[in-house]
Image 1: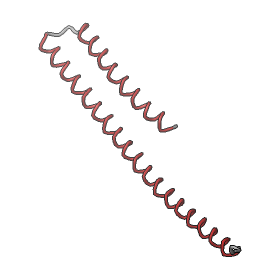
Image 2 (image 1 turned 90 degrees about the vertical axis):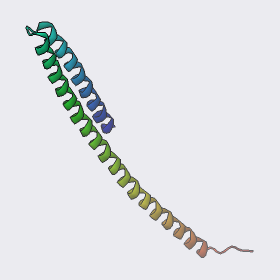
Image 3 (image 1 turned 135 degrees about the vertical axis):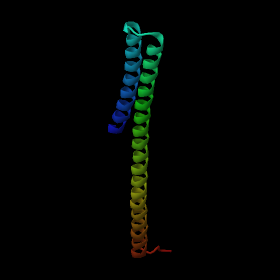
Length: 105
């Protein structure tokens, strides 16, 4: 459940970042006392910054996902070994009980 909150938090941060960049860019264009070329350069710089931030967030999310997958694999292997051991112990106990009580014909 905590992992779901973490993933949701990353999505919310990403959405807030994109929306903030769009709103900020729009306001900057509306209030900028610059020429067209200066405004286009400014917008290009802002777009580059947003792209860099999105790439960074994406890389962090991918790293977290890979880490979670690896932890899941480790848990599965550990639990699988535990289940195999329990099954073997159960079989041995069953065979021991059968040996104690031979069938009568």
